[in-house]
Length: 549
Image: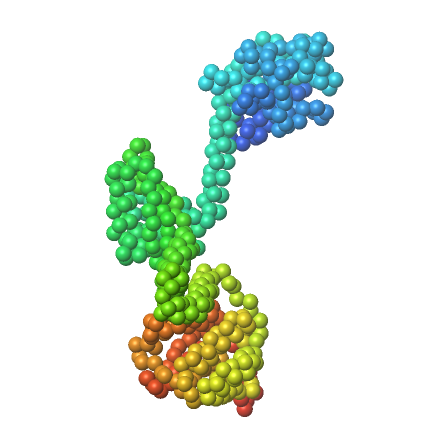
């Protein structure tokens, strides 16, 4: 129902009060401001006739306003909902400036720039009413009629009974929307964070923990919500007491600022991970009820730090001897030249060879150290292709026949014809086989070296067996360690077998040595997984095989 006569009809006073009460109920019935506006406009039409109704809200910088257009049968408007408009030259500006209602009796008089737009759209009179909250004008409600001189002080008086509640509802809605948006963003941060974001209370429970905890620890979010004190229980035993004591310092109020610590935790699968933890006191009404913070997985950083330290140690260890010998040779050469001593000059003739040998040793040691460092750090990923282990062994054995022949060593190949292909890095497997054969030749004075391949259910076993010096039990246990040498004065860096071990492990295989003791030869063996399928000899059964890991 809409009133077409100007002013109010006294007989409708009771209805007006009911409508005001109803509008006030509507205002506080929903936090969806769109629903409030639309429902309110329908009720207002019962007591105030309007052709155009807008609610405008001031932006935070007070220079712009946003418009919600709510109109009865009003189809054509230049003002768009949700668009920001400048305050200057608008009715809104006057309402905000003087903090009082403003009536425009005739839009044809162009009191405001916006009057021109509305006049062209058929609006002849206007009423702007300020919306104030806590002493600050936050917006306005604006009525427009196609009749000139329509709005009066009675309309202002009527709307004054609604405006405070409407202003309060708008601010509540704004606050709710901001809170909801902030919560949405906060939730998104928590759910998508690569780090663990958490809250931990004094009673040992987690009110909040982010999903990344499962990726880092292997335990689900539900596990942490349902198990008390599970945070510290996952700590590595050697770190647990220290972590508990440091957290207790925060809970007791001894530390009121950001505290960071590093510790190890045991993953659900049993392996150890390093975490960096930063915590602050969690307060409620001024009291510390727990801690809040985040945990970052620093396992890779710790691994790289260890590799860096190992590299520095390895370089220092291995380069010390050849560097000292080079310095000694240079010193000897200088003394020979300065003294003219015949004996020293004769010794000086050995210096070039000494320098060459030790420079070669330096170069070789550096290469080996860098090779194993790259393998340990994962900087050299495997380039997997299907390879024939038989072909690799045949090729390398052919290259080694001359050096083996000089020591009267026979190279014997025991290669079955049906060896299936393996998926491996061809260059690294060649390096592995080459080193094992070189080692066998180096430590065999004469006799034979047997290169054998054996097909296992899910792998290929390669053996390099010699009739050389052999290894005692203690040596067998250490032979794959970096820089291990039976004789400290022996040539080489003691890294070759360590590199072989890494290559095999990268391929998910195993490597080991067998020996009956000194003078009884050695057998270096390693396995490589088979990928694919093959038939058992003498049957039609097909066995499907896959690499472990």
